[in-house]
Every structure is written in C-alpha cells, then in structure tokens.
Image (tube, rainbow, N blue to C red; front, side, top):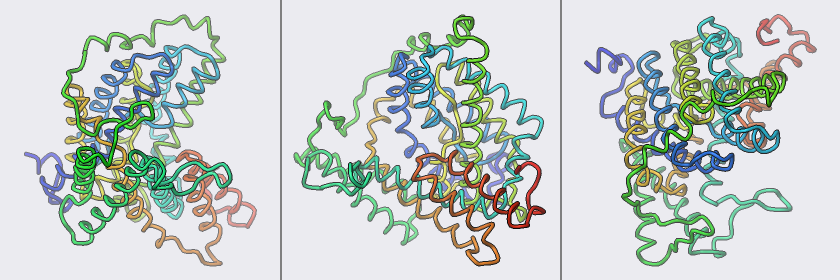
Length: 441
C-alpha cells in the first residue's frame, strides 16, 4: 500500500529510511513548539493555544504536502514570520493580534488563488538554475549559522557583531552546552562518514543523552532565569480547552478601527515575505535532494505550493502565524527522505506532540544544533555546480550575493530577492537581456 501511494522504489528509498527521515525532520523542527508560543505570547496570545494551533496547522499542511505532492517537505509556523507578526505588526505598528491573524488568513487565500492559477509555480520556474544552486548553498550556511547560535557557540559581540563563545565563562550552562554541541557534531559527522543509517537522528539523541548525564553529574546546572532548563522531560498533560482562546478569533475584530488601507499594507507585507521565504526553501531543499529536473523545475511544485497556502489559511483560523515549508526539511532529506512518507511521519509526530508537548519541547537546542550544522555542510556542496568563470559572471555574481545575503541579513527571503534583482540588473546592463524571462523582471 505504501509503495503504491508514495512510489518508494521509484525514488530509491524504503519505509525504514523514510520513517527515520521523518523523525529526524521532526526532531530538528521540534523547537518551534517551544519558540512559537513564546514569540506570539509577546503579542498577547495564549501560549498553550498557540502550541495547539501550531501542532494542528503543521499536521494539516504536512499531510497535504505528503498526499498531494509526495514530497518530504514538512510545514510549520515560520520563524521570522512569527517575529514579524509579534514585534512589527503588533509591537511597532500597534495592531491587535486578531488583525494580524486576519491578514495572515487573507494572505493564505490569495496564495491559494495564485497556486491554482500557476502564478507561484511560474515564479519558481523562472528562477535560473545557477541562482537556485546559490539559494541552496545560502540556506545551508544560514541554517548552520542558526545551529551555531542556538548552541551558543556563536555569540553576540559589540565590536565584531559575532564571535566564538568563551567556554569557561558560565561553564555549567552556556559553556557546557556549546561544548556538547561540538561533541555532538563530531558524533554526527563520524556516523555519517561511516554511513550509519539515521546518523543525524542518532547524533541528536546521543547529544541529548550526554547532556542529561552532564546534568546528573552536575556539569550542567539548570537556571530558569537565564533560559537553561532541565534536560529531562516532564510528563504533564496539555489543556486542550485553551485552543478556544485563539480559534476563529481572527474574524472577531472590527476592521474599521484599523482602516482598509492599513490592513492591505499588512496583508501584502506578509504576502511578499512569505512568497520569497517559501520559494527559497523549496528551491534549496529540492536542490539538495536532487529533485529538480534538467530544466531546474520541481515536479509536483503546484500541489506543494497549494499545501503551503492551505496550511497558512488553516493556521490563521486556528491561531498561529504564517505556516510555511521549513528549511529543516533538509535534515530529513539528508537522512534519506525522498517521498511524502517522510512528511507523513513528521506530520503525525506534530499531532501526537499535542498530548506530550513537554517531552518534545525538552529537546535542547544544543542537541539539534549539530544536525543543523551538518545539514548546512551537505547543502553547501551545491556550490560546486556554480561556474565561477569570466564568461559566467552574470550568473555567478547573483548566486554569490544570494549566498552571502542569507546568513548576513538573517533572512532567506532577503537573500533570494537580492539574487533575483542583481541577476536582472547585471544581465540587462551587460547585454544579456535575452536570458531574462518576463517573470524575472
């Protein structure tokens, strides 16, 4: 049955590999169950309600992706997009979170229309292959940087912006976490080199277990005030009635208090950020998985984009920010995931996590950081496909700008937009306008 639905043999994979890949993807994404309630909580939303909404919306979107597109991509509330809602739309612009969710709902409806009319697919196909390779490399560096930050290996520095951590300072919290990330990275890399199945997942679990041993021996000391919690999961149940705090609330606000023009501005802000974020992720992950055809197109892109749009719409009704395809899907791809079965596994884990959220959210960031760093390395390999020669500069320079923009500007959408803009300008001015498709303009 699974073979018939997901065509495992055709994609050179197996049920075991897909299950491991699905678990791996979920493990690297589980942090969203802790982070999203915290971020949207700053906008005045109930944390438990946000967690439940995130789980359900992730399940809906991921199952749609699996069954309609048969792709190993997993969806959840997008990082950056949730911060934009909480700290810009609500914090800076001063709108109520219900208005922000309504804007996300409208954005989702627009994306559904654009997906059904092939507009989003056409935009994806219009991006040149070299630039798609650059997107993959840029995302690889970006998520590796996220892993380094999450583990506190990279810290803020007033003079150089970032620097390596001082392992001896706060050794029993920040220092030991950074050290455990290094140890976990070596474990993951060694297992991967030795071609051990599920090496990335094993690396996550091994690092977490070593961390728990450090807590038992006193090397790691939890400190809630500084954000260092116990590494052992609790077994409290979730209050499901809290979902009523956000469910359908996006329709219960008087837009006259906002003004239609202001509301349209908010909608289009979400629209464009989500468009480039989703396209960038799909390009990067599918490139890593060798899913693009000889013309640089992704078979099944239309249902994938439609699944993304449906998840965003459903998420807004449930009570969470824009749901989008997660770049961490690349961890499952790196673990061998090639079909929708990978997504099915991750989707059901999100659903199950509603009942055991405290267990899943106990996965420390220093345990998932080695997986992100390793996946970053694997995605970086696409750089060898970009020709950095004199006769290819109008292709290579945009790819280069895209690559460096993502980690330095901390945004996938900024990176891909800069890559596209520079591609058009350079080819137009350098007499290669024939290479530019209308949609690239």
